Image (cartoon, helix red, strand yellow):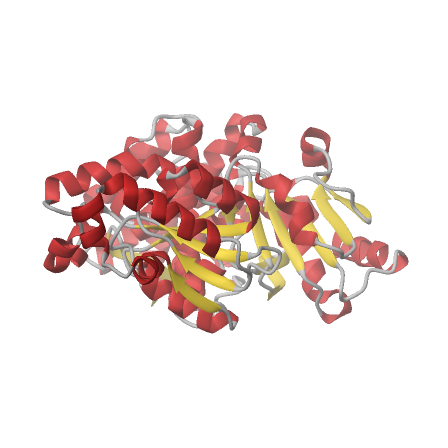
Length: 500
């Protein structure tokens, strides 16, 4: 995903979020030019920002900042690092919406203060820590309202901005810009099409069965045949729209047709927006194994409109929330705090947008470091080894994906307490969270032997043995762990018999 359809890429965020450093990294990857609005202001004024504030006051500085930012944002092929207060200008926000791909580098005020404290005297609005935090809270809403995407800037890695999904209200309206002059084939869940409709004028629409039933060789063959009949070419684009299953199969069809055509993922479920639609894992199922046939094929863009979740059935929201819990356990920090406090249901629009963006930002960070799962990306499988096996053992009929993952999470947390030193209270808290969100905590009436057998066919198995992602603490995942047969069998037995 690169900002080709956009005039430029703009980085916004609080002071100390690392915008200047990230802009240089991103510009180097894109072959573009990096510019810093604060540096341009000082060059144009012939004075430091501190001197402008001291001599002329903040209103004069803001007028100069606005003029410089409007000029920079009119340029093409640049990565612009904007000053922390630039988004307070309505004109600057309007220019950002007019042709910039705008990424928020999100950082806590504590981290930001730690980074700038030594040089705070050179920053007119960073006189002391308390006022610094109040300024951050005052601008936070503007940052989120202005951004197209979010990157967690607690650690600054410019590559993440090139993978950041577009997540904002009305994001589906960006599809014509992203498609450009190419012909587009829409591969979509037929139920979603009935509710949302085609968000652009497609070259052809391939309607998929709902849910996991779409992820079969027969459905993929039908899609390939349809695309071939209508002459889809490598220079065209596939747009996959629907829940996690729909984007899985649409991405796989794109990866394999003509040995690979570009694609855009448009997840319309919570699980798709926070996990399944991000990262380029595509695939279909075989009778004995989930996602057994597939490819890593990164979409050009991921486009999430949280507004479509208003039509999501309650059970599907809850299933997606199980993946949110998983991501929060892996990430820790602010995301874990949000999840612990989240009341059952969709929440308000602003909170929902932040939740989706933070989950997506964590996954993007992991994927950027390990795009083809050679190492750390395996942490994203937390809860999935036993969860996937439960789905296979029940022929995908008894539990939704998120429900099975939630049960698998409890098993993974129990194994983590046995082998990695995780506080057992974490498992208890997650069990309470699952119940609060009306998710099952046991796979009752499922054969433990069937689950164990399904695990032996897992695509991640080596020598018939599954390697687990576990936790040593919230926010501290580990991977490639083999707890041993006895512990795994006990974990599975607990998963089907859990009554507490």
